[in-house]
Length: 261
Image (cartoon, helix red, strand yellow):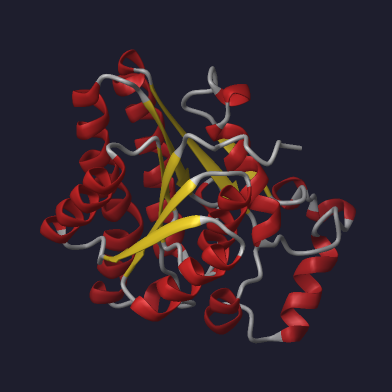
């Protein structure tokens, strides 16, 4: 789909880049020539991603960051910017979730998810966006949202609300920052199986089987399904796409209960 050198001159910063979808995007962009920065709270997964990229001849580095901490975000962004002389592409992938009925969700649980998912996406976008605008060379920002932002999803009201906020933020920044040559788009995965989501969401295999049977394409998504879409949005082919909310869910959002699918 893309040439091996398609992103040779591009720098990509990915939050949550040590595991799951973030790691999948990091290794995929690196395989096509991009210089990669991964940032997250835990050092070990970040080191693992960087080592995996280096073992294939790629260029990658890492910084620990908690996207709830504004000062640390500024330090992280400054470190990557100084190292590379700029950031071409920011992918806001870091996020959190857990299963809980809305009536039983604590205030702390609600605020934690909203602070990580929505506020963290804003903080990272603002820190990088300010530098992009000052540099005057444009850039790309890609937010990882979810299809549960656009419909009721029981047991994860906290997640759906935070992702709906990301969608609105994406559209607002696209309008505000478009004149500076910065495109802002969002990818909305449906159910995706990763090591993390298996622990947090998909422990009941009977439930997984039931949910998969309802997805038109018959399976959950994987990081390999998300990464090519991110690459498209970051490529020249996606240069005129701005403010788009793009589902990547195998048609899951279209299933119609009254027809049994």
